[in-house]
Image (cartoon, rainbow, N blue to C red; front, side):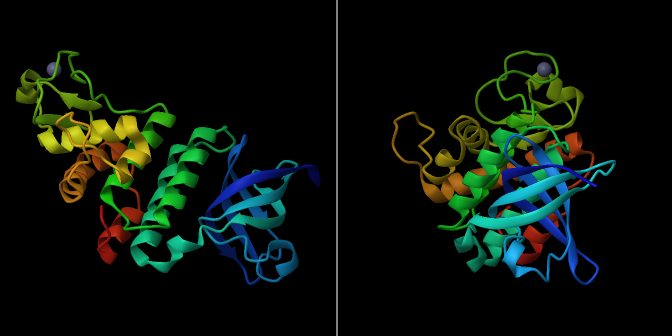
Length: 265
Ligand SMILES: [Zn+2]
């Protein structure tokens, strides 16, 4: 039996066919967080769903709770923003899939996650123009971790709290961030070059805008060399991937797809 129905704005994270006609969709909704819903007639009813169940779209959804059921029921959906430009390019699609999986795995069902909703929507919008870059992926990861209350420690040593000398440093995914020279002797951190450290610091505070328009690390306020910044962001990929893996307990499946299609990581 259907209980109350709710009309909500949602991002489609994933849609899985169920039998010949139906589907299960994973949605990130405003105010209600992540919801999984059963869609009866997903493939057969264009009137009720009309192409709105493709991943990465922002939709308006009419959802009902189902008594005693974990899955909601999706009754109707219409597209608000299809994020169509990102579908023109395999690298962009790979990045969109990575972003959706990241946000899915950092949220708990039914817990409001409006910060992540706004972040993912902005990421998908920006992905529609220009290259799919490592810089945007790093900004996304850092902001998503922050929104989930899991931000890495980038200011002081994550093991002992001491100051971390400027320049090249070690990053210990299990300790939770940068570590100082003394702690580096006791454990094996991953090297973050000076440029990579500066890039993640800028992306942590400047977000997706900084990923698209980075500033030089010399403090002059001039634009950064775009290629050097992208290289630095790519170098920070592995330390952050291992940090994510530490918190999630697994590797993101879509990161393999990034590698397969040769997309920036
Ligand atoms: Zn330390």
